[in-house]
Amino acid sequence: MDFRVLGWDNPFYNNLHNLMDLTDETPSNKNLSVPTQTYMRDAKAMAATAVDIKEYPNSYIFVIDMPGLKKSDIKVQVEDDNVLLISGERKREEEKDGVKYLRMERRVGKFMRKFVIPENANTDAVSAVCQDGVLSVTVQKLPPPQPKKPKTIEVKVV
Image 1 (cartoon, helix red, strand yellow):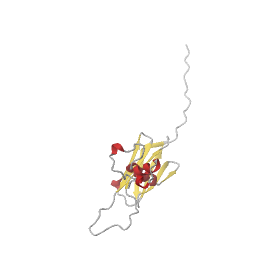
Image 2 (tube, rainbow, N blue to C red):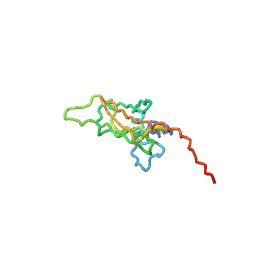
Image 3 (cartoon, one colour):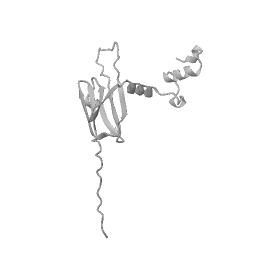
Image 4 (cartoon, rainbow, N blue to C red):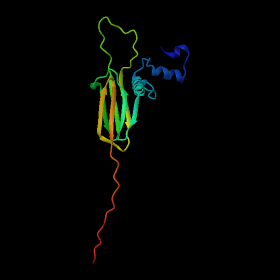
Protein backbone atom coordinates (compact mmCIF):
# COMPACT_ATOMS: atom_id res chain seq x y z
CA MET A 1 0.00 0.00 0.00
CA ASP A 2 1.35 3.39 -0.94
CA PHE A 3 0.44 6.08 1.60
CA ARG A 4 0.69 8.76 -1.10
CA VAL A 5 -2.50 7.35 -2.64
CA LEU A 6 -4.33 8.33 0.55
CA GLY A 7 -2.91 11.86 0.40
CA TRP A 8 -0.45 11.20 3.20
CA ASP A 9 2.63 12.46 1.37
CA ASN A 10 4.90 13.66 4.16
CA PRO A 11 8.28 12.51 5.54
CA PHE A 12 6.76 10.65 8.49
CA TYR A 13 4.61 8.42 6.30
CA ASN A 14 7.39 7.98 3.76
CA ASN A 15 9.69 6.70 6.51
CA LEU A 16 6.92 4.51 7.88
CA HIS A 17 6.38 3.18 4.38
CA ASN A 18 10.10 2.36 4.06
CA LEU A 19 10.16 0.72 7.49
CA MET A 20 7.28 -1.52 6.58
CA ASP A 21 9.09 -2.49 3.37
CA LEU A 22 5.94 -2.11 1.29
CA THR A 23 7.54 -0.51 -1.72
CA ASP A 24 8.55 -2.22 -4.91
CA GLU A 25 11.73 -0.17 -5.06
CA THR A 26 15.09 -1.85 -5.31
CA PRO A 27 17.31 -1.73 -2.20
CA SER A 28 19.63 0.78 -3.91
CA ASN A 29 16.78 3.33 -4.14
CA LYS A 30 15.75 3.04 -0.49
CA ASN A 31 16.44 5.70 2.09
CA LEU A 32 19.66 4.57 3.80
CA SER A 33 18.91 6.50 6.99
CA VAL A 34 15.93 4.24 7.76
CA PRO A 35 16.75 1.04 9.70
CA THR A 36 16.06 -2.22 7.90
CA GLN A 37 13.54 -4.77 9.12
CA THR A 38 16.38 -7.13 10.01
CA TYR A 39 18.04 -4.46 12.15
CA MET A 40 14.77 -3.66 13.90
CA ARG A 41 14.08 -7.37 14.52
CA ASP A 42 17.57 -7.90 15.96
CA ALA A 43 17.31 -4.77 18.11
CA LYS A 44 14.00 -5.98 19.53
CA ALA A 45 15.50 -9.40 20.21
CA MET A 46 18.40 -7.84 22.11
CA ALA A 47 16.05 -5.65 24.14
CA ALA A 48 13.76 -8.59 24.86
CA THR A 49 16.56 -10.76 26.27
CA ALA A 50 16.31 -9.84 29.94
CA VAL A 51 19.29 -10.51 32.22
CA ASP A 52 19.80 -10.45 35.98
CA ILE A 53 23.37 -9.71 37.11
CA LYS A 54 24.45 -10.58 40.63
CA GLU A 55 27.72 -9.80 42.38
CA TYR A 56 29.08 -12.19 44.96
CA PRO A 57 32.29 -11.77 46.98
CA ASN A 58 34.21 -14.05 44.56
CA SER A 59 32.23 -13.84 41.29
CA TYR A 60 29.69 -12.19 39.01
CA ILE A 61 26.71 -14.24 37.84
CA PHE A 62 24.60 -13.44 34.77
CA VAL A 63 21.18 -15.17 34.78
CA ILE A 64 19.12 -15.35 31.58
CA ASP A 65 15.88 -17.21 30.82
CA MET A 66 16.39 -19.52 27.83
CA PRO A 67 13.30 -21.76 27.76
CA GLY A 68 13.30 -24.46 25.12
CA LEU A 69 16.83 -23.80 23.86
CA LYS A 70 19.41 -26.51 23.39
CA LYS A 71 23.09 -26.23 24.25
CA SER A 72 23.87 -25.93 20.54
CA ASP A 73 21.55 -22.88 20.26
CA ILE A 74 23.47 -20.82 22.87
CA LYS A 75 26.93 -19.25 22.54
CA VAL A 76 28.90 -17.61 25.38
CA GLN A 77 32.10 -15.77 24.48
CA VAL A 78 34.58 -13.28 25.93
CA GLU A 79 35.73 -10.61 23.49
CA ASP A 80 38.61 -8.15 23.91
CA ASP A 81 39.30 -9.54 27.42
CA ASN A 82 36.52 -7.44 28.95
CA VAL A 83 33.27 -8.02 27.01
CA LEU A 84 30.97 -10.94 27.76
CA LEU A 85 28.86 -11.86 24.72
CA ILE A 86 25.82 -14.13 25.10
CA SER A 87 24.06 -14.96 21.85
CA GLY A 88 22.04 -17.62 20.13
CA GLU A 89 18.98 -18.38 18.10
CA ARG A 90 15.55 -19.75 18.84
CA LYS A 91 14.31 -21.60 15.78
CA ARG A 92 10.73 -22.09 14.70
CA GLU A 93 9.42 -25.64 14.92
CA GLU A 94 9.03 -27.51 11.66
CA GLU A 95 5.45 -27.43 10.46
CA LYS A 96 3.68 -30.77 10.25
CA ASP A 97 1.05 -31.68 7.69
CA GLY A 98 -2.44 -30.70 8.76
CA VAL A 99 -1.22 -28.49 11.63
CA LYS A 100 -1.53 -24.72 11.53
CA TYR A 101 -0.83 -22.05 14.11
CA LEU A 102 -3.83 -20.25 15.55
CA ARG A 103 -1.62 -17.90 17.52
CA MET A 104 2.15 -17.50 17.59
CA GLU A 105 3.43 -15.34 20.46
CA ARG A 106 6.74 -16.94 21.39
CA ARG A 107 9.71 -15.05 20.02
CA VAL A 108 11.84 -16.75 17.40
CA GLY A 109 15.06 -15.53 15.87
CA LYS A 110 18.45 -14.40 17.03
CA PHE A 111 19.26 -12.81 20.35
CA MET A 112 22.43 -11.21 21.67
CA ARG A 113 23.57 -9.31 24.74
CA LYS A 114 26.98 -7.76 25.43
CA PHE A 115 28.28 -6.75 28.85
CA VAL A 116 31.47 -4.93 29.73
CA ILE A 117 32.81 -6.84 32.70
CA PRO A 118 34.76 -5.13 35.49
CA GLU A 119 38.55 -5.02 35.61
CA ASN A 120 38.66 -7.40 38.55
CA ALA A 121 36.95 -10.18 36.55
CA ASN A 122 39.01 -13.22 35.63
CA THR A 123 38.11 -13.79 31.97
CA ASP A 124 40.03 -17.08 32.04
CA ALA A 125 37.60 -18.44 34.64
CA VAL A 126 34.19 -18.20 32.94
CA SER A 127 31.66 -21.03 33.11
CA ALA A 128 28.11 -21.43 31.82
CA VAL A 129 25.39 -23.84 32.94
CA CYS A 130 21.88 -24.13 31.49
CA GLN A 131 19.42 -25.88 33.79
CA ASP A 132 15.62 -25.94 33.54
CA GLY A 133 15.66 -23.24 30.85
CA VAL A 134 17.81 -20.81 32.84
CA LEU A 135 21.35 -19.97 31.71
CA SER A 136 23.79 -19.00 34.47
CA VAL A 137 27.13 -17.57 33.38
CA THR A 138 29.67 -17.26 36.19
CA VAL A 139 32.70 -14.99 35.89
CA GLN A 140 35.15 -15.44 38.73
CA LYS A 141 36.83 -12.39 40.28
CA LEU A 142 40.58 -11.96 40.42
CA PRO A 143 42.03 -12.03 43.92
CA PRO A 144 42.66 -8.54 45.30
CA PRO A 145 46.20 -7.36 44.69
CA GLN A 146 48.56 -7.93 47.58
CA PRO A 147 50.11 -4.79 49.03
CA LYS A 148 53.76 -4.53 48.12
CA LYS A 149 56.15 -5.18 50.94
CA PRO A 150 58.91 -2.67 51.47
CA LYS A 151 62.14 -3.70 49.87
CA THR A 152 65.29 -3.43 51.95
CA ILE A 153 68.36 -2.24 50.12
CA GLU A 154 71.74 -3.11 51.48
CA VAL A 155 74.04 -0.19 52.06
CA LYS A 156 77.61 -0.84 50.95
CA VAL A 157 80.57 0.69 52.71
CA VAL A 158 83.28 1.98 50.43
